[in-house]
Length: 189
Image (cartoon, rainbow, N blue to C red; front, side, top):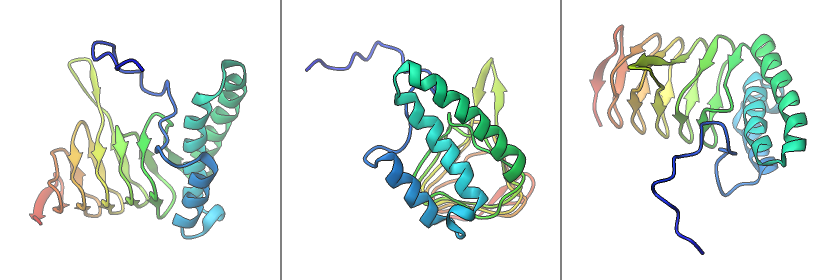
């Protein structure tokens, strides 16, 4: 077996299946249904299903991937219009993510960890710096309140809480609580 070449560029974002490793697609879909309060009747489930499918299709042979891409694009637009949730397949999403309430969610992040709860009217946004698009990184076990805005290349540490309507423009430490506009740290673990 050959060693990976460190000099090779990383694959382009969205060019591979970035679903969590170690779990099959349908098992991941079932887990997402169990995680959402209303199961498959939940808008959060449909957003996650569309996201997971968008990643899964990247592992298909090119001919089948074209059909998968058509289905994904239809489902992504349908999810945006009917559920009010924009979660592109290029966002690396962990397991047991709960989209607790639907509507007004723009979730364009670098990554969202495991066991994260996100509520309605939440925005994860891109900040362009020197031609580079910086996206938030949300750690595991993060609880994000209604109307929170997390912008740019900030990192929200594991177990952090983001208060309702907080605007996060700086890193949030592990276990901390961030509130206000702009967000300030209230509690550290």
